[in-house]
Length: 262
Image (cartoon, rainbow, N blue to C red):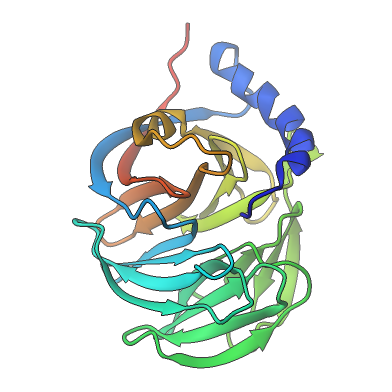
């Protein structure tokens, strides 16, 4: 998400650490490990907030004041093909596709932007309450995270909230939910400032799976304070899954395999 949020991490660590420990103990929640299939170049200055693949085209949003952008990226080379700056003083956040548009959030600006998918020309804005962290599309509605344990299901036409969903892990609220991606009827989500992603049941809100991204972080070799895993893209046509991180020099195609047991 943004820099300087370390103090917010402690409650999350207390919840995620027991899950991580399950990798060497009988797991109540299934644990998967992200194994690298292919490594691709990624802009090491991109403070990645959102990521998605739509019709085989990779889109990314980046944060930081004065550096926030929405961009179209060539997957193979990592080259930025098109880019538009998120207007100052906004801090860019998550993105999602919707009917020829790219919708983008801002962190604390209470406003989002609509961009033309082909040209990235700005088409309009939409308001919302609270912080904007991430956005994904289910195909008929949007799902939005705001850093709390509550996800919002959004009408893409007017950005009104249709309903909300409380996310829990082993019965406890899971906060710091960051980048989202809709994958095969589940919500995959990065957890801010950790090397974990989770699988969320979109009906119950329960975390039904844990994904260990530590191998990717190690391979990326980016260890700054906020250079954490963030960015999930699912190519539904090719059935390929990708992860990256903030200011990582690499983006990875991965396969998820069950964590090994002792």
